[in-house]
Length: 335
Image (cartoon, rainbow, N blue to C red):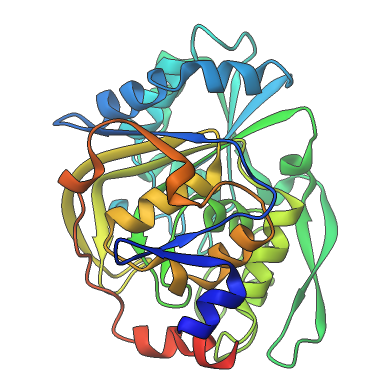
């Protein structure tokens, strides 16, 4: 691993691997809040970086929130309405147009998830519009399979809009293929579309392009594919909801972690770095994030990340990884 760390530009500082982002010199601010109300800590995290958000918003015409709704029927696996409430409360004075909440869940229609998770109550309180990405237009992107051959996929042009300010909000969750799933993976996989009517399981109508991101049955291409998608579209603002995280067999069947934290940053990679550390994982072992750090897609150098709000060392937990975690780390030996 020492040789790999060197090849990826990782540094060991105080016993913790640090990612040195080539070409990213400026300090990035990441907000960390802790408390007893999910909506409140999300709101306060955003308020503490408001100047950063205002600066980024000034260049855009509309706001799209991409929640994490991998499935439509398990709240622990999906963005909570209270998290969205905190974001919308913060955005209220800053945004004139209705905020668009857009999703393409993996296992079924977006409308089903919106109903099950109580997003309809947000429509009554805030100027928002709920969007099903699967019925919007798409463009062609390419992923690699287990032989690293290109596979065409449908990618949401709705999320590619250069005038859109995209907020990716995701739970802190352990993952069965990519070690952890946070804001970048939420946006990347959600942007890959499926046929309307598609559902997981036998007898489903249509097909989904989402599984192609895994890069084969043994997930040989997943880290490259996520890195590749990050170059296509990364979050303008990241909000990580760790009020109740998920450990062990995520991203759907894991168990809850009473963590009560929220993370926010206009630098998505810096936010991911903090999220990984809060979960007790080694950033250097999360392939797609280290690739993005090496490519300078954001700040992952710990010495150039300013945490505002809570002291991070007070809130680090050791999330239990997925049962197959050693297989997930196999890319380290193959790199």
